[in-house]
Each structure stands twice: as C-alpha cells, then as structure tokens.
Amino acid sequence: MESLLEISSFKLWLFLLGILIARYVFVAGIPYLWLYAIKKKKFQKVKLQTEHPSKSQIFKEIKFSLFTMIIYSSGIWLFLYWLKHGYTKNYVEIHEFGTPYFIVSMFLMVIIHDAYSYWIHRFMHHKSIFKYVHLLHHKFSNPSPWCAFAFHPFESILTLGIIPVVMFLIPWHNLALIIFISGIILYDTFIHWGYNIKALKVFKWQNTPMDHDVHHRNSKYNFGLYFTFWDRLMGTYLSK
Image (cartoon, rainbow, N blue to C red):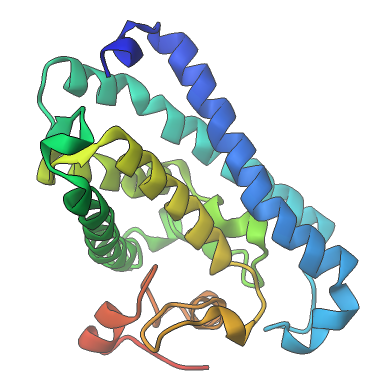
C-alpha cells in the first residue's frame, strides 16, 4: 500500500479509469458479441424480450456507463486520503488475519453489498427522486450487457458508496477489494444480459437476468443485486 500511495494521484486515477473501462468492455463486450451477434439466432429462444435493443440504445448505454466509470475512478482521491491517514480497516499482509479470513472477507463484502444495493435501489425508486435519478436507467427497458452501469451521475455516486462502507466496516486486504470490485462489474453485467440461460443459475435465491428483466419492465419488484433474499423478505419479489 505504501508504494501505491507514492504514485501521483492523477496517474493513479488515469490507470484506474483505464482498468475500469477495459474490464467493462471485456465483461460486457464478450457476452454482447456472443449473444447479440455471433450466436444471435441460436440463443433467440432464450431471449427474455423478443426485440433486440437498437443501435441508438446501445450507444446511450455505453455513453452513460463510461460517465459512471469516470465517477467511479474519481473516488480514488478520497480513498487514498483515507488510506494515507489510516482511517480505514485496511491491512497489508494476508497472514495478519490469515487466509481463511481473507476468503471470508470477500463473502462478507458481497453480503454487505447485497443489502446496501437493495436499500439504495429502493431509495432511488421513491417517487420524490425516481424521475430525477433512476429513471435514466429504466429508460433502457430492454437492457443489454452494456446497460449495467448506465446511470445518472448521482446514482453512480450512490452505488460507489459501497466501497467506503466496506473500507470502514470490516478489515480488508487490497487484493480482496480488487476481486470484490471485479465481481461487481461481472455480476451487474450478467443480470443485464437479457437472456435466460438456466445453466448459470446455481442456487434458488440467486438473482438472475430473468429476475432483473422483471424489474426493468415492472419497477415495483426485484430490487436485489446478487440474491433475492431481501426481495423475498420484504415482499418485493416477483417471478417471471
């Protein structure tokens, strides 16, 4: 972490922005190319909505997602300040807490994020702010993989809030946080695929593209990110 802090914050921001964009293009681009182009006819029978997004929609999804990546990467200045002054629960060596905790910490991040995401999502659906913030994302009623991070800037800031929550709440190693952030990009993109590929559902309470497609078409239901636990508990779950 000391070597990280020695890099100029601007260079680090550029590097992080490049990594986030490259990872987003890779994670969203591959399923889009495979499902919406190369194997389009083969997978049409499991397309959740018959129509395919227009080129104009895809362009808008990518545009707003890139704005989100700029906002996400800009958080590095605040995060570095917290790290430099020892405000967070960061630890440097895995052996300080052991390998078992290193693994458990990533599961804790996912559980914390799932709760955070559900309630932030419900908050953004409140009638007093929905049309000003979250409506932008819901304009993509037939989402593609590129839609995953097509947010209003304020929504980008709210969703970024999970990082300081984790940084201040539990002891975390740099690598665990990197893996967790990669998982966010991967899973958020997955639920926006627009295809119901049943083999990718591994347990009952897993949130899937089908569950999230319901949310894009009926915004009163299915607010979860990774799981359907909170939706089932709060009575906001609706199967297709």
